[in-house]
Length: 306
Ligand code: GUN
Image 1 (spheres, rainbow, N blue to C red):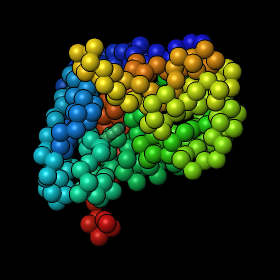
Image 2: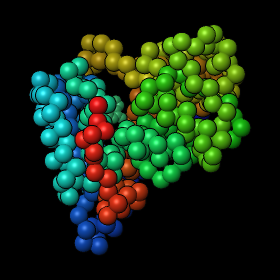
Image 3: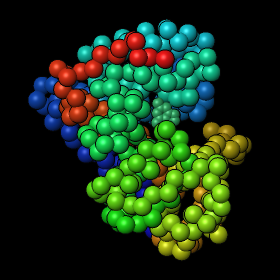
């Protein structure tokens, strides 16, 4: 078994990004600028956003963190989003999810200008991804593709089983692994809570992507010998022996499954850390206007919003 070392790959990519930032600045242009909106005080969301902001500093990006109270109204949040949509100094921004219950997530994602949507959650970017057009790919799936590429894992003609159909990971991953090209050209099965006989599906898989959010769900008896196992889960469990008070567990029973598979991502140090660098890559693309020219920018048509 070989470990897919997200930490090492993420560091390599950060160095590549930092070198590009130096070049951009050397040409007299400003550093790429990522903004993040965090609503409320959810501990996990705070940790994720802080790590995104810290990573910006490491590669020489400018970052802005906008913290909003959990009882902010939907309209107030949209006003804040519009400010960022129209702020030319901001290349890309994210609204950290989940949002408080009284806010309609779909409405919020539709308010983000697609050319600044470095999370790749806006339907315009989801459509571009689906049609294999250039655009922002959501950070976690992008991180998974990158790790597959850097370890030169074969995907063509392979049977890829994805567990979990979230808009953030499972669903986009199913599209990406089936797309023409590399990584891709796989035969994809997307499993979810209504799938019958899940083990029957996973046992046929050459590549398993576990993204259902249940700690240590995937056991060795569900995995074919020599399969590639990508673990997207990050569940916090209380651990008083740690300074943080918690430790992280993935969706895969690492202890058991690692003995049976060919490659596996650890938790932590696997996909989670790749997600953050993917967001930096998307922000760099935004700063370089790789996918959208300024003159072709969309305006958000209020009539089409829910
Ligand atoms: N919550 C969990 N993952 C993500 C992500 O990739 N982006 C945002 N904005 N929120 C998240």
